[in-house]
Length: 158
Image (tube, rainbow, N blue to C red):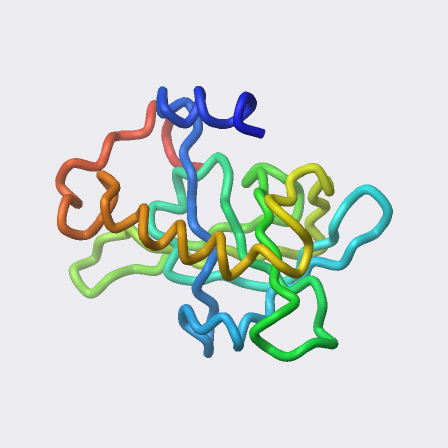
């Protein structure tokens, strides 16, 4: 995964979106409803993410998904990488009060994601990856404190 994604990410050849927040849940992991059901060598993802900043530019999304609904709410969460061009992924803009469009809703309707796109262990690494991601985001060029320094994607939004 490192060889596949890190060089392209560093060159901004891949633009990433975050799939954490959900309607009626915000960033509360215990309320996560987007599901990923394993079916052989793929997961079938269904659900919705919201407030996906710059998601209209996303080539890939790192996503927290519920992979085991039968355990306590804080468990059963996994970290998946999803290609935004996969059939069944729909990005819809959320218009801001100033008329701008920087955030989006992302819908997943029977999206097939290869098992090889699982980061870490199923049902175990979701919250850990999210915590690390949140910490690194605060220091990244895309953090709110540095919003004016966001790099411009090399391609136009879908």
